Length: 462
Image 1 (cartoon, one colour):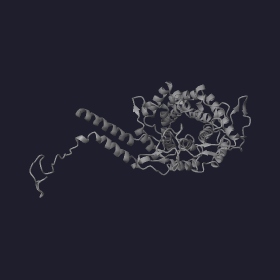
Image 2 (cartoon, rainbow, N blue to C red):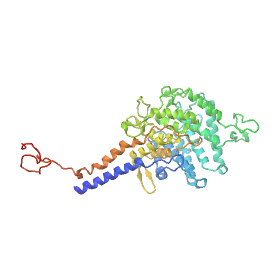
Image 3 (tube, rainbow, N blue to C red):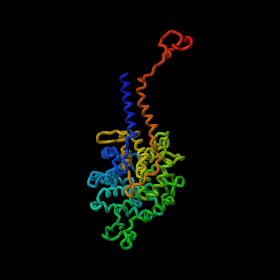
Image 4 (tube, helix red, strand yellow):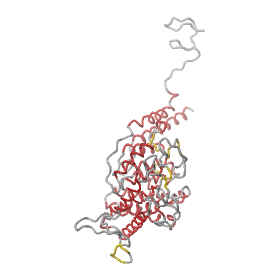
């Protein structure tokens, strides 16, 4: 038994030391570096998608297949943007593969082609964002003309839908609208104007060289640069959003009335974490104010053990659902993962780094020479969200200055102490404690029948 106990003690200590390392070794690399392990994580995810992980995710929630492929493609774009232009061929190939899956019958199946724009604003916004990312990987003078035309055409359809709507929030499904979906779509319009800055509307395929029917005039004073194609659309959208904020938090609501855009549900972290990731590319000043309000109301330290993100704002309770996943002490694990990306996009390295380290501790990553998977690889779509979050940075706006930090260096101390105690548990029987036995006292040998303790004035023991 002694050998078995010592082996268990060694294993327990090794696990504790591994936990310490995962808490203190940087798990992010900021907006410019390649995050540790993400390339191997994407290698695992691609193999999992080939084995049907997208279909498995679809059985869990309505956008499972879509998100598994979209986030994989977007993370590939993010890694490619960190490389020189001549070394992006692999990332470009993989991003195109992911886009083809989104545009396939399996990718469009959950969505209604009769909506405006077709398949709804969720499908349109995320798909168009990936299209823009694929163009961003290519030098401007060597972009595929068909991809440029498709991106311009889809952006025009999204812009026209917003221009014709009386609400800033378009439907993702018939009779259902979530502000987060429209935020992604509007960010894709800003990406269009950054990648294709001519300001000219896409050509009418029936009349080459002619502006599209109904397109706004692009006439500008002689010598002046043309205005961004969707500047007016974005400005009107922001005005509508500011008029329809959640009155309890001042943030974009989680769900709205599809006809009016009026808030129908309080702001929630599963949508806010995505909104904060994209809003910085729509309007950096508005995004900073929204991010600080979100961080103040949603980021917490349950039981004093590390930062995490509540699903509902501080002081508000609510049920778990398919978006949030199970809530532990009010915390949504999915929102916590995605907030990592929002924090990094806002320059909040302190919070992003803390969330990444905490995730590496509790996420139980398993490494091989070529792959990395979290939670033993049982939920690949979770790896997709994490890889996408760790590679976050603005695509249109400049990287923001860091906000005032709310996470201090000592946030790790309680966890480090707990890990060190766990590592020491197996060795407690070997510590040099002297055990008292049947009437023995310091200064008298065990079993000494004599009365008084040496050097003491007490009488004999009973």
